[in-house]
Amino acid sequence: MTLGTQVAAQLPYLRRYARALTGSQTTGDAFVRATLEAALADADLQASLASGRVPLYRAFNKVWSSAHVDVAGNDKPGGAETDDLEVAAQARLAAITPLNRQALLLTTLEDFSVEEAAQIMDLQPGQVAGLIQEAVDDIERESSTSVLIIEDEPLISMQLEDLVRSLGHEICGMAATRSQAQQIVAQHRPGLVLADIQLADGSSGLDAADDILAIGDVPVIFITAYPERLLTGDRPEPTYLITKPFQESTVRAAISQALVFNSSRAIA
Image (cartoon, rainbow, N blue to C red):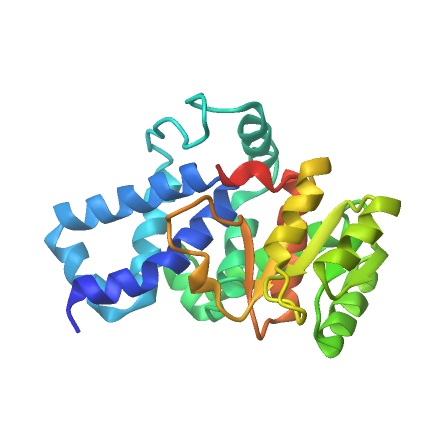
């Protein structure tokens, strides 16, 4: 397998991480592009990428830490360079300790070990473990909201319900199909949505989410066994995307992230 093929296989996941870290598809992709450009300009860095995911994310981390990336106009109709939502999202992100968020996302969303995350962040494992605990504490302090769960597998639905309640949130409804989700939203507008993509009756969690977003801006976390189908770059992608089978800590991190940005439109 060539180096280009190896890196290409990891790009969807690096883009997912960058998007979760920044709260924006445009900004996240800009940091990923800058990372690849840095690798092309540095033979030693390029050679290190053959060692797997850790060097790639380590290279990204150095670019992210430098925070000197020019972001071109976004891909929304109208061509505005930065919309009010992205500005607000970045302001919220600046108010939260970036290292805490990085450590949590690396070890949950990207499933690195504490030791691997320490290599990526140029820290000691004990420091990373401390950052993760601080991030978890931040999650516990999040204000409560009402959550709609769209999931057709009963065991997973119950697992998500227990997790959501353990974080202090309420359940406004449980839906197994798009039509059930529509009925629930007609009576109770959720503050957060957890949605599977492929539902039992053939309907789509993506369509159900679109129905909700047509009413108002609500953060949506998608949960799927096939994330690569959405991480193509061909269309605006979900900011919050979790792979099945999931770790509960990953869902906790995504819920915290979604409530921080309080939006799903930060994917532009």
